[in-house]
View 1 (spheres, helix red, strand yellow):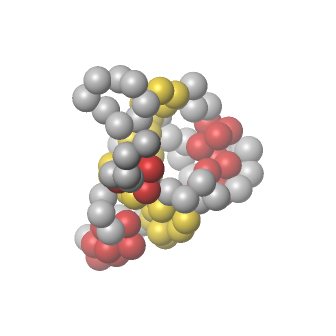
View 2 (tube, one colour):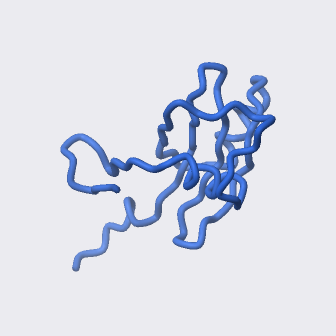
View 3 (tube, helix red, strand yellow):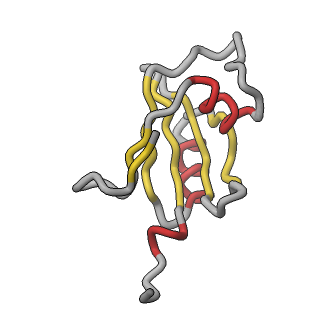
Length: 100
């Protein structure tokens, strides 16, 4: 479930763990050797590869590096020590300034 019409946000969504696993690993099962996330959040950034590289240099272990999803969004994800699945994203549709 999601909406693009929640004041103060670009996008708000709820997704089951199977969908998070699919987005991260391409399978409906979260890997047993990686703690399951307790929540997720996405941050819209201008340069996903640079953001991912900066976080890697600071010691964060990425679940996956920057990649382009089939719908055009560029994402990189990590799981923080508190169990938060964090995505750095660039969503072209949020930046389309063409009229109509």
